[in-house]
Length: 331
Ligand code: ASP
Image (cartoon, rainbow, N blue to C red):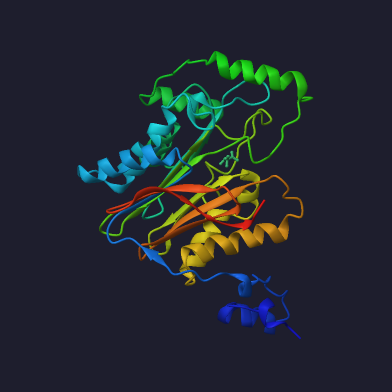
């Protein structure tokens, strides 16, 4: 007989599927979800990943305060991080791939689900702005590599040829001892993802990264992939991810968080349930981190990480702080 915990919230469609002899819909370990009180902003709310989110949120907040749209806010907020060349995981200050090339991924999405994305672009300071331009000026969602670069040059973006000697030195040291092997672990990444809601309830999100340090040349992570690194649907909510991108791609992580909120989960519950799905599907998660942030369409917000140490920047009318997210594993 089906265990109740294996048979939760599958609704009419799921019941019909079972009656028709289809495979049981996987369990979500619902009993282990901690139902925390829901935190809701009274007015606008901005969440972004890690401590570099604090100045990004400050910029996004100013944009809203001076009458900018929520889309302007999430774009200009993360542009602050992209322009910070001391940041080793976002923008042109990021660590290169294993061949020494800094390759950037970014995306943006609005309340109505319109989206733009670029992946594997080199030598541009603001990939998030190229992503927005792709959304606004083309019939497409995603441009990659040389094609994206060519299109950006034709559409008013200029190259930035900055090379940071200290970053190249660090890469050379890595190259000397690494056997040319990329490693996905807790230390070698930290995207900025931002999700935000304005005082009228309009949502938007953005995500931008140099990706995992010393990745294979050509590797694209979750950050520019709509549904993985970011997903916004004004009817349900917005979510973004940071951490080992492969985990977010395999589970369509941000989309999953939003769909769980659509089904009534709180943001914390939706993030946790998505992490539990990742835990179930990946036996080998040692040293890996992944975290999600979420805002539900009613203004409730939250975030959760796989392991201790995931923090996010929170900005509301009365809060401007770094929050330590809840986590699945203590180590
Ligand atoms: N998710 C990014 C990637 O896999 C890295 C990160 O967020 O830390 O490229």
